Image (cartoon, rainbow, N blue to C red; front, side, top):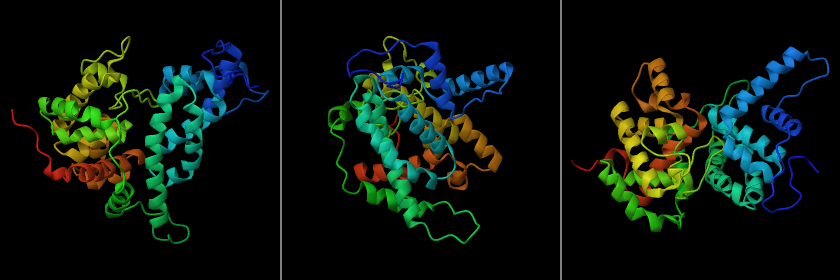
Length: 322
């Protein structure tokens, strides 16, 4: 039995012995050391690996993975995160089967069920990437494939969402969420971000540590007044909605455009600002192919969701009057 696997499906988690912890850290980085590596080099390599793990996978997620096969889960999570951060939407398509296979494993344990729910939402992106890959025109030999056009993205998402019912959890939360967003002076229709972030699950958790219905990272949550430690208020639907509304209002004020605000909500305001400055533009459509693959899918997915749920376009959003 792997040291990362438990002997049963109860609450017991094996103690974090240093030997298998370092082996697990090596696995996360996807590298191995040879017997000829010097001690100093080994120490540097271990430090680099530990830095990678701290940066990419939240400590709470690592702790929760104590009851499942870490080898398999972390390998797939690492690859998924790397490709979501990359610039090719098409590269996501081959991961769909692997990600889907993890979900039943993670659903077995209370500690990892939140991660399973996050992965279910990401399967949406992988399905769209698969459809975009299939619909892309053939590329000439020895040339890179052109990224999907906004029109193709739109048509894929509209088709994918056409028969999708409102998530069951949404009905209980929508009135309160819309009220909170309206009070925060942002369009109440933006609450549908909770569908594409978490399917309205207050307990959803990403590998990087984003938490709650609106998938707030700890620094963002703290910035807008939430506690992230006993209790973690990101799991409180009303409080997380207030923070999300405040953040969206700030982003729209900073970028002056809802597409750029949504891109910044997903990829980070600093990254979007840097991309805009390098491109010498303030136009979303002129930078879309420079965005992370996840963000390239995120904005049109929200637009399709907004049209499906509210019959509106982004240009038709109106903030409540003071």
